[in-house]
Image 1 (cartoon, rainbow, N blue to C red):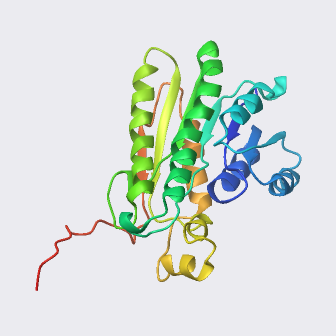
Image 2 (tube, helix red, strand yellow; image 1 turned 45 degrees about the horizontal axis):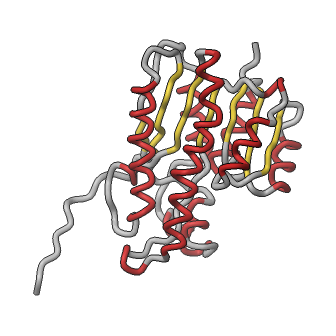
Length: 251
């Protein structure tokens, strides 16, 4: 039987790469995003794959509920949910940040993920099968200057994933948190508010992870034998590692 994957934030970066990967393996796809023209373009590019697109903002609780409730019968039984939609805004220190941007990150990275999960999980429980993949980040494990709220939201994703897995003990539902390090995608362009030069500079002189790499990793975790669960998978490029403790010394 053909399986169905539901991918949020499918119009760019990881989401788009995942759509291509699952389509190539013959899965049915439910793809969501906020930009209808991009969704239409992606659907056309994936032909003849079986694709259903839904345009809505995951920050809108009612829209999420209605979108999932309106799924056609042939797409309603979700085997894999990939909570991919998320963003970072800015790299300023906390004292200089915009509170509206903080709220946008919380509403998207935390509340949006909760809305989608709560809407789809009951169906998985009823069928006693399914896999939820959350996109975390190394920023949820390690602090760095300017990560303040973004890192906090990804720490939430990490702990929520573990707690969700604890709640699901006794079911056949799997939960995985994928924690990427330096990855080149539209992520940095959004973070620097459209400044492509600043975004490109993040990857200068490096060989970062690419969206196709993450798509392959996620596909692998969801196609392992059903009795195996990858709780968390932290992945960084070879040219990224950990720095020493920062110490400020007075002159």
